[in-house]
Length: 494
Length: 112
Image 1 (cartoon, each protein chain N blue to C red):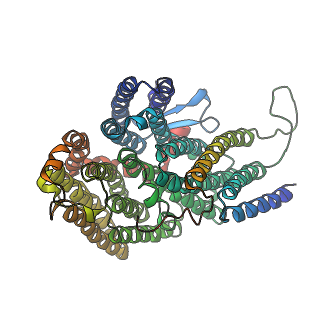
Image 2: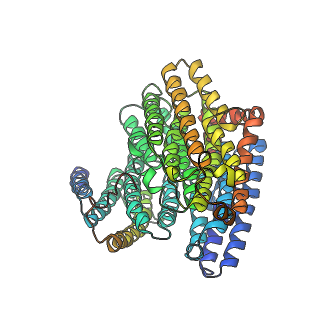
């Protein structure tokens, strides 16, 4: 009875197809997609629970034994990511109910939203590298549609670049899979890991490792390949931008962590040094971009890049504490980054702009919006006792333990600049002279919208206050994924 | 045979890279299509070209061909087909809305 592993992929897919037939009936769409997301949340939390207490669950599709058929693997890391996906999916969906225009909601928004969730969950759960490619494509095709959804002039211009870069990356992904198949003769990730261990990861296998880093780095917005992100995430409405900013880059990061802990872990002297340099450059240039901007959404888009750097830094340091810190940072970032994007959307609704210089004095007219934004901005910047502090603490501590002092320095410096740009948003948008007249401010009430964001902020606070038990859980995950034989044994059943 | 195919794939990748680097949107799209096809050919070739009989019961041959690359590439082609269709539609819409297919003019200014 392992079919539960398949349900997080199957349910949104089937419901999405059903919803295609009710495209014009808004009420049906909303009710069904809402119920589906809550079902998914319950299911994924249950999955995470049974995986934590009962060990890794696998499902061999069509009953073909492991190295020959496609397997789905739910280990702790994958189950955690699926749960995070459902949480952020629910919040963005309800925010979408409240803010998206009726035209947009009727334009097949909900089916593609669910297909996106299908692709993301599939990418987390699959144990087959070609299947990973397929689920990446499911996710990407839905994301192409959602990112141009509405079809404004700006969206079309920037989305075409997003589509082009991702189609190119997908072609490279096939090339990478072709190389790995030519070398090992298998596509099952556990089996590849066994074969790579026998071949001792030399020469051409390092080339393949870097090729995969390049492919996933394009989706995850790593250092030389992040140029497409800030502009393309600026276009779509806040509900979609929040889901993308919170979730999509993390799928790339998940794939990097998975491949470099399961398959290409034999030569950390080479691959993980490369990753460390990329991590430092990603953090540093991302945050510099954010500092130079004066637009709410653009600052946040650049911050996605710098935060991705922290996650990769955890992988590069490669100790259990560092990996736990990286996973903590992924979870923290999914909550907080999505929340901040949603706040950007709410602020835009009030002021009609995302330009910080045209805002001001929102704290007087909308204190609820202002103070809850403040909490999530401080969580992002890493002020204790909020969640951002503990991920950086774990990363910095493990960096010092492993004697990688320079990356610790970069991380702390980037932390200061992050705080600076979060304060910049707060000062310009919420302090200062009131730009709206009192009547205007009274008319533009967004209490409901802000309430829909609150679960994410609450989770960021809880993660910070309950850092101790969370880290116990994450250290278990980190030790599990740092020992590839766990994954291999549960898939190949040797 | 494999060497020849690898050379052909090299030429395809070269042409595709050249097309992707041009300014015209349609050429970029064609370049991406070629890039995808090059990757598919690479997969088939690297897995080894026809090495034996079809892997069916009752063939009773000495060697059988590996069916997996064909299945994989078929899937990839189908996905590529869908993506290409979408790519053409979005390129056309962009051209219609912006009245240009010159990527230099689609850059967007820095301060909007």
